[in-house]
Image 1 (cartoon, rainbow, N blue to C red):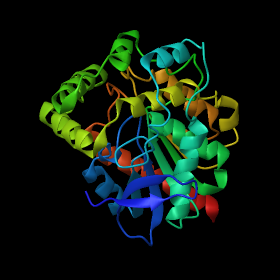
Image 2 (cartoon, rainbow, N blue to C red):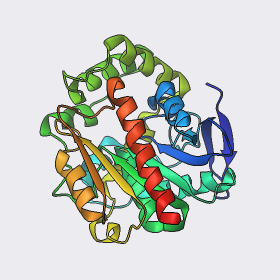
Image 3 (tube, one colour):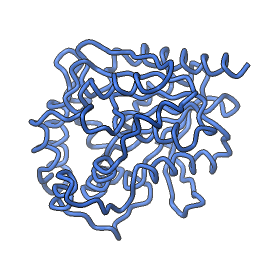
Image 4 (cartoon, one colour):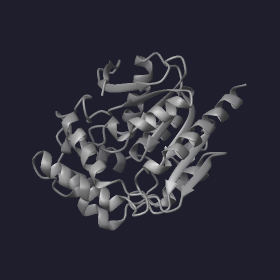
Length: 299
């Protein structure tokens, strides 16, 4: 990867990589909980660039080569107590992650972008739409939810995986990643085991942090319900979700689409919590179509 480092006005540093012509409109890709930018496959980024976008993917704070918040230690006990609602004090919140995305646009000299987020990244993208509407050309929320506790819940069988001890070292991380991929992917669209392992090794090499992942979890657990606020989103919006998603129940996608006026819902039969390689072309074309709606709206 040929990533670079952006220094934000907030003092944070974010690692990022670009694809396509810088003169094209920017499309910002926001990845999910604990996952670095390489989880947006290079081939998918190149496909989006072929649709006429200047594509930017980046490591969120506490991920990969971006700023770590190691001075804010977190424990599994804190995660559990936050999950049960017993405490709300967290190192940072969803609004801070959204501010990071906007700060990256500032650092790149981009006035507004098409913002695409997956899972937690969808929550960040939605927060950008609500809190920074002038920086958003279009919104695509993939396998995400509104923050309302009664929609988009995790299947109970995943809680042990999310809160379990990861083990020490690269091999333990790879084994955990393979088990996690098996748990959240569908049989119909599962990634090949060798692809999962290769991605896990690249992720570990970029600098994986169990505490960083837990800090992301705390931000997700304490996010507000955006349902009412999403009614103010005027940008063209696409919501993509899988009908077999165990990590974020499909009700989260349906609720997001219902909350945003004029949003398009693409519910993919059999898809779980993974962008299937075979459907990347469909997703790229759908994102481009949504962006064209923004162009038409601007004229």
